[in-house]
Image 1 (spheres, chains in turn yellow, orange):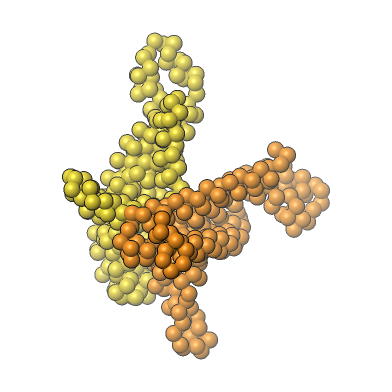
Image 2: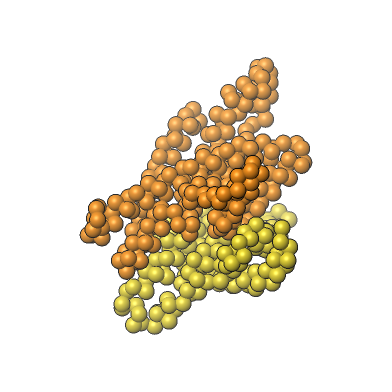
Length: 225
Length: 230
């Protein structure tokens, strides 16, 4: 065990963890909006809209995240037309390409989580709202969405942790996130075990925090408290 | 389309072989994962707290640390570990481990952690009466396990195991960083030499979709078979 290396690499890895957290939080926020949008589209009665939303989630859940990042980062740059539009400012940056891929990916999973949450809401609750003369818009925003969020918290907590692990793929498109820096240190020092312990420890710590925050929220918003 | 031709002019045969490689790695990893589950599920269910701790450490670490980091650990540390073991037996030469073994083993360890959780959940959700009934019938420990518990565990675990399989299948794409020529690596090579990344990565996505779709169909059949009588 090379403890000196472990102590020396700790601040570097901690700095890189900040990038991991940035990638995670930005893509989760965008992904939540995408997920909510597609969950609503999935519940639409129009078969085309419905199928479109299903196709989106099927596509992103059926292929590896790595393929999605590579298509966006390497693939889209190949289209000459895109290079002339303002989109190119975003697409030439690996940082934004990674975020787009992560957001679309987590959006697909989130839409499934929210859809099943919407579907498990008891019809009686909505009927109760209707019989009180509340408009369907307010029923949706004030009754259905809060209940759906509460219902989907445990599954969404898992999704956050999966996504945190997914951000490690940003290192494949030259970003120096926690895994990227860990790989760099491993390949220059050939001390995989030591670096794994430190980097893995930081990841586990983040998992631990996320897990407990979700647990706290679950308790806070539970119905029978 | 000529990009996908079989033979020297296209990448069709290369990608076909790469797809077979992906399937081979995924199946090997899944089998290795079952071995890990076989060891760690009893530890998880054991009443001994120390054994519990070992199994929980394994599943917590693997499920909390990115797959890529685990792969790097085995990719860079694998040969060193094997050489260390060999040096104990007096063998001092350099040993290089094959990328297939490294890849299948690291993905296997990951899928093993998920499988362990699935089997634990399945065994725990078997009705207590079943255990008692087996005792009443006077079945021995082995008879109880193989005739009563295992068949029910398989039925209960199958839906979640199919999720583990899908995750494992998609995780194999990460082994491309070690240079093993599976779908992702082959697409990377083809994209580099033809300068057409959009086409090849999209085609890789189609291949993965096809694999997940076909395995879904197959698993649904299995599920129907194992839930006969329910």
